[in-house]
Image (cartoon, rainbow, N blue to C red):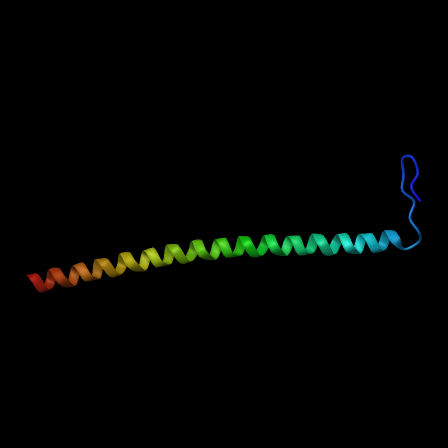
Length: 69
């Protein structure tokens, strides 16, 4: 029933609503965590790739300079 300032629920309805709320919040948290972990993994991959490219470029330069001399 709906009163002027309160809503009165049947027995067990509040527990059911709490269960549903916990489920919705849990799913939202999972989505946020997945997105953050994906972002961090992509950021790490970009930095590792950049470091590998720099290392390869330096080695190529060193090899070419030694061949030139």
